[in-house]
Length: 317
Image 1 (tube, rainbow, N blue to C red):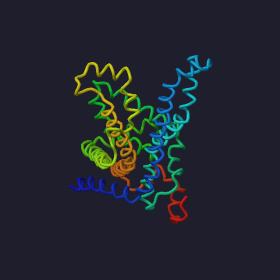
Image 2 (spheres, helix red, strand yellow):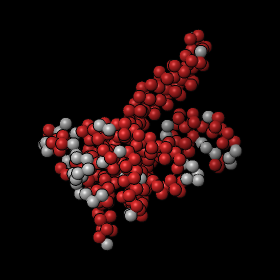
Image 3 (cartoon, rainbow, N blue to C red):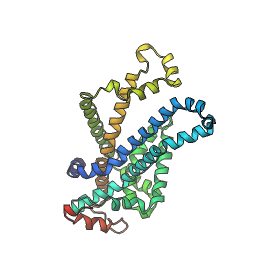
Image 4 (cartoon, rainbow, N blue to C red):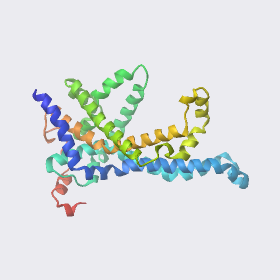
């Protein structure tokens, strides 16, 4: 019964830390989340515009008649958006480790300061972190195989603590992140699965509530209408519609709803990433038998983080 209480306590403690520091977490996640969306917009809109004007440019200016010059113009036009997207995406990946350090800071000092110091968890071990994400990507791609979906889902839970192990036991190596996570979860698999389901339900529920609320003030059927019409006009969608009954065909209104729902879901899941990181950090600490990550063989919290945590609010950097 005690274990069940610990399980429930971790969920409530995670919500408490997240809510008490929500302004910090929202500030930290703003660029990784919004930056990716803006980057996509800054890529897609110029590309759509050039798609329509390139034939005229090629007719008026001989230099643009060459395909290589057209490609160079497209790449040059979307470069700002691409740079923003890549930068925001990398920050999002870094957050998976940095948020664990922030959780430890919130637990030990009650405050979260100095985002760059928390990012240092990754920056000091950047190649190991890239290798970690590369291994995760390979395993994820393999899990998309229809024959591996079920075992892939099972092992996803076993490896759900890899970022916590990386944050607090980096010196043990990347492979250790997977083996240690597997060992920690092995005896509490179904509790870990239940916790993952609860976190998913919370994010999904917030997404649905947000979509419902915004749907009252936003015309979802006409959300990004130009983009929706451009997507419907593609050869692939036309081919699909030609083989579908009228009531199942893909329309601009349907795509507008899908774009709106996808955007809201991405924002909500992005801004609730800290909540999931807090939960898994607390779960990692419980399973590894440590309340504070300060034992030999564990990674010490950056002293600079603790120093800044003692500063007054008006001295925050």
